[in-house]
Length: 301
Image (cartoon, rainbow, N blue to C red):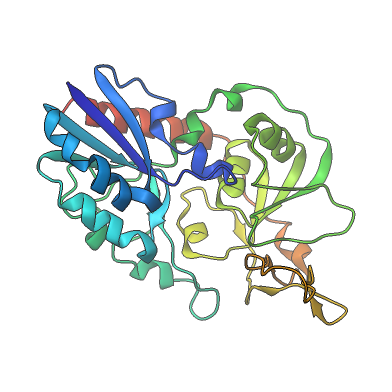
């Protein structure tokens, strides 16, 4: 009996995380399949970890998503203790450094992947332009979703797709956030715009795969590591939105404390970054081919 365990973020209010697992797109015949939220890995190991000894083979796929982030390093270290009994495989994961000010051109290149990926049998990352050739590029597996094969009409010159925590605000422009749970609804929306303004990594990624122009408003290093890079607006900082001098939405004294309010950024003269946005007509096929290549590497070992 063989086990395939997929460890990633399972967040039903983040469609990018939900669609990033390769288990949704490839057959792994002969394996019992389980999924574990990386945020609950320690609990799973405490309650079910001993069961790993019952399997003749254990493979653990970590990904996809922006899991190379200091919050998740303890989880990677826990997984590393399971090798060599378990074969560790990273798939389409990427770095997260939260920095907008300073040297934007190179800070993401300083990321150290080794503490996360040591002990992995197969290591791939969705990032490019970094000094780590031992980690091949494999983009997010969501490119394999069959919804990308459907024709979708243009309806607007510009649409806005926001990350739920990093909101972009324009008057009179169609707007959606990545909390939307229906993938077809999101692709319909992204494809409806000739140009997409987005603070979502997957909004930028999917918009590019749809052949649209993308202007991204980055809040972490992951936007700089896309192979088919969109235009990047020079965000100085993200801040709590102010309306009439107060944070918005307001919290009154009798209300319970709410989660951290969404942040926003300046969009001053954003039109100047729209004129020369590149498009990548072959990006969808290139990303799919790379995922199929990696699947063969993993399954033929």
